[in-house]
Length: 452
Image 1 (cartoon, rainbow, N blue to C red):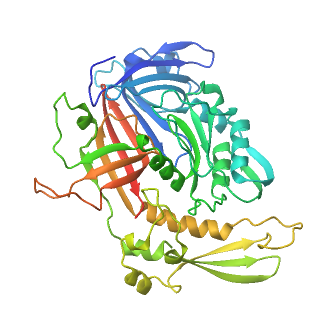
Image 2: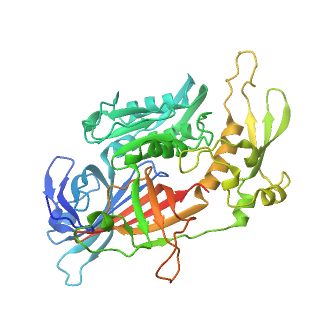
Image 3: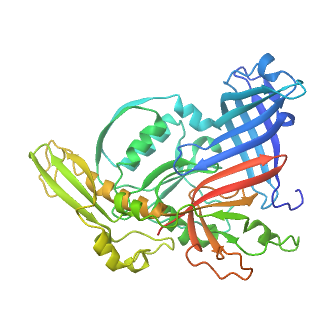
């Protein structure tokens, strides 16, 4: 094992294979490598800038059909990545100043997601939960059998899962990667309209309803470690129910270089930016407090107005895994009552061609909860993204989207003895990560969101 070094991430293997299995070691050619992950992306993405002085691009040649095997080790917490990737694009080709080689950038994604992206789905799903359909699509089109997960011996504690979430071993990864699936409610009846498997699962996610998780904010995304089909609330609850999973970070404290205090070094945020603290315009017009549906019933030939009021709905889960109370909102209750009205509520239209609650079962689809899903997602997404920060630090390739970090933040002032910043401190959901590794040093940028 290498010595402790907070910013060091070593690439220990970079082997590229042509479609005919001819291989080349490209480790000496890599100048920079980047990885991007997000809960809004169905697959993580990577790119590496190389200085090709051996004619690999032109004479091997690279065709955009190569697989890439990468191994990386972070020398802060000894995090290890073993990645099976697929190269899909080469760009930014230019000679170096001495004209002795070419700079270019290779873009790649995970091999599993690449193989799935070659498929298209035109298929009907009836009398089944959206989450069950998502599992079937993953197994069939990602070509990965999902087996109930065995105990993870790498974890110090067994994982507690809420909302009846199921944890699976992803078939061809020897248990290294997991998939978490949160069950939805209700019976779906849809036709997948010629979509890729990633888009098809997203199609199901935005139609997934859960009474347990009122936001209905289901997402499908891939990280370096796992796949997820879960709501934001379930991700937060998973972390708060398993406190050992929450990563601790601090901002504003004086960073130490003392080698006897390694934990302090890896927990330090060097720069934190809060791009938007208050914006009443978005509060008014994004439907976070009031939204109104015009529900057109094609069967009964009528239209109904349905109003959503955030102050009455309740049930959303905060960053501590508890039910959110209105007194914790950034606006006062009197201001909310005076400002957000049915008149200025965001409006949208839904089409009802399915049964109403309590109807006798017949040829129509069962309740699809479209209005409830849209209203709840609109409100929760607004409040979930209202307090967002970007945080810059070194190393920490162990932090992934979907995890929760606890930030101890000081006030953003020039005073040396800053007070704790109650607004910016607390738990955040990791929305996205970007790792840029240049000459062995890793700079990490996190996008963090906090329910506000």
